[in-house]
Amino acid sequence: MVQLPVRPRRLRSTPAMRRLVTDVHLHPGDLVLPVFVREGLTQDQPVRTLPGVVQHTRASLVATAKEAAAAGLGGIMLFGVPERLDATGSGADDPDGILNVALKDVREAVGDDLVVMADLCLDEFTDHGHCGVLDDRGRVDNDATLERYASMALAQAAAGAHVLGPSGMMDGQIGVLRDVLDSGGYEDTALFAYAVKYASGFYGPFREAVNSQLTGDRRTYQQDPAANVSEALREVRLDLDEGADMVMVKPGLPYLDVLRAVADVADVPVASYQVSGEYAMVEFAAQAGAIDRERVAMESLLALRRGGAQIVLSYWALEAAREWL
Ligand code: PBG
Image (cartoon, rainbow, N blue to C red; front, side, top):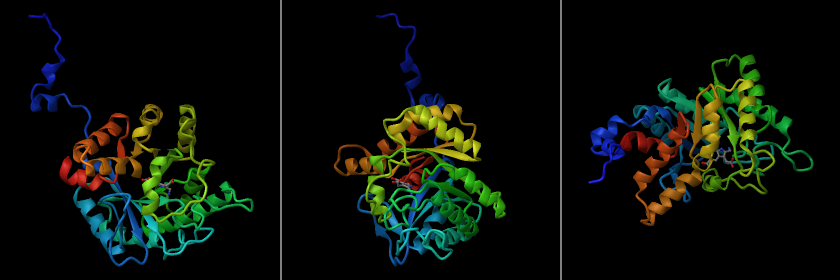
């Protein structure tokens, strides 16, 4: 017999023992469901690159939002897919544009039972697919884009969004939006800053979800995956100084180190967005019989919690809340 006074396996010996010593928890209220609503659609449209995810009609989106509220989800994040695109993304701040009418539908349906969030970005609305407007040399014009974002913010707040999520990585976006919201009488509308957002290949499947056709890339505004963590911390500091109510790190699993570093310094709720590519990898691997879908999905959600995310945005949010937790 070996003498082993220390045996870590003791605390793993039964399900009850493991439950007792668990310190990473996931609750429905921590989860936010990203959803797509497409203008002119009469029936839900599956997204080929995201098994189980659809482009919603206005009606099916409302039904899903009610289900999310009933499941106790923390929130729902709306992305609009307009019928017509143009250079300035004019559908984005049109009160009759798809995202704004859908925000109104959802808010009317769920009231304050679910936090209604709006993606605030131009890439779904522009014909060139960039997150901002272009100058005469074809570059994304930071300050001209801020004016477009300000107008979007007013439209989204008027439509009833509780939270706006500016995801375009323009410099100064949080400060400008806080100002315009406050001047417009929307001082209770919160800003969920995509403070740290990398130019990531993991957004691949999302493009089909929003029918986006980007030419070029986003490397002049989104962060370089190979760049230093201090750049991420600087982005967080700027957003907090400008009035961000919550901050997000995106993508999730490939940037757990950045998430941890942000969670260690931010004194607001920190979130992680488990993006389309992270979801699709698990779904397609499970379809191929290579991995256990639910088990791996849950493991990835827990990893984000362990990495420091208090809030997790995930395409599995509703299923996880209803069936896995
Ligand atoms: C920009 C935006 C993107 C995603 C969320 N907001 C696309 C991009 O920045 O290229 C990607 C989300 C995902 O991949 O799940 N509006």
